[in-house]
Structure formats: C-alpha cells, structure tokens
Length: 292
Image 1 (spheres, rainbow, N blue to C red):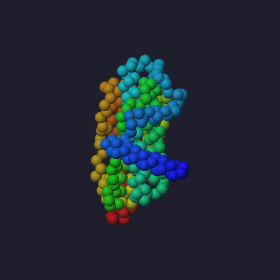
Image 2: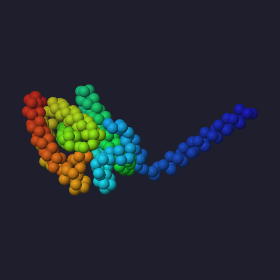
Image 3: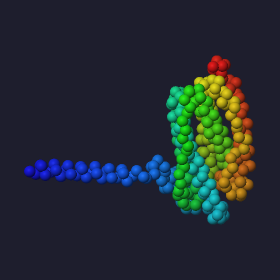
Image 4: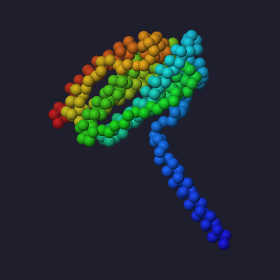
C-alpha cells in the first residue's frame, strides 16, 4: 500500500515539474535573447592588477590638480578605450576560427588566440585605469563586434581575410602601438605609463601576427588575393573621435589620451609603411601562385 502511494506521489511531482518547466519556457518566449551582455557585465573587467597597488577612488592623478569635469572626461575616454579593446576580442577569436576553416598552419591559429588573450588583458587594464581615475566601475552598455561569414570559394575567402587583417590589425594595431609608445614617454602617472608600455608592446605583436597572416593568404590564394591587396584603399587620416577639444589639442596626453596631431602623424606614418610592405609582399609572392 505504501509503495503504491509513494509511486503515485512521485508521478504527480514529476507531472507538476514538467508542467512548470513548460510554463517557464512559454513565458520566456517573448524575452530578448540572452547573448547580449547585461548592464553590469563589465564590472569584473575593471579588476586588473596595475603597477601601483589596488585600485581605489582618486588613486590616480591625485597630485595633478585635475578638476572634476576633466576627471570624468578622462575616465570616459579610458572606458571607451576599454570597450574598443573588448570589441576586438571577438575579432581575434573570429579570425582564429577563419584560419582553422581555411586550414592555416597551427602557428597562425595560435597567434590569433594569443592576440585574443592580449586584447582581453588590454580591456581589463583600460577598465581598471578608468576606475582608478573616477572610482566608479564600468558604465552600463553593450560592446558587441559585428559578425560575418567568409565567401564560399577558398580564393575569395583568403582575399577577404587578407584585406580585413590589413585594416583591422596590421594598420589599426600598428598605429595603436606607435601612439601608445609615444604616450608612454609623455605621461606623468607611473601606472598609466606602465599600462601604455604594455599595451604598445602587445599591439606591436598583433600587427606582426597580422602581416604573417597576410603573407600566408597571398601564398595560398595567389592572384585573387594579390588583386584584393593591390586595390585596397588605405584611409590617409584616422577616424574622428568624440572627445573634448582639450584632449584633441593634446592637453590630455600626460594622462594617456592621444591628441589629434599625434594620432594623425602616427596614422599617416603607419599607412606609408603598410603600403610599402604590401608592395613587397606582392612582389615576393611565387610567380606560379600569382599566375594561377
């Protein structure tokens, strides 16, 4: 008798559990997808260790006579730098997947994953600097990188990847490396100086990895990749930034935020060097591949 009652009770509990599960799924159908970051999702990204000890309110720039408006502006600028680095984590991860799909050598796939880890570190350092300046955690908001699929034919996919790598890494990371290296020599805060030196070294490695990928794409894809690279238009000037006039005039460079003149100078210098490098890569490609 007791066993029959127990079996009936368990059956009823199972039915109720299933019913509640179905109801919960039906209630969740109208909710937004969960793949977007929640407003507080960046909170733990600001916990990176910096050179002078734990981050605390007014820990950075305490002796520089920085007014409250400038402090907020500087923190916002470093927040944007962190979000930019966060977006590029997805770019490096996607690139590693593209390289696997195209049967790239393992060292290229490994360098793409290494770049992703470096960008995670950069995002954490920038978020930590922002928090050290104004004492707040990361501001709410999503930071999602766009997705795309490579073209179907392998030669077209290699050409697409080569062009993207030039723009997204060889140029962008090359400029960032040069700008941050100069800012590291101009800043007055030791923590910001150490962070900028670390970031500059990492960006230089990312740019070097990018050129290795471009050379491999050309060696594998031949003429279609060479044509894609030869017709690539390199923008002569950096994109505009939404920062105060004082920052654009170079007044925030002692706190690690580049002025417009410095950014424009390094952008043009890297563009000229990249054009020469692209020409050299195409000229040195095997004739049999280019004629394919």
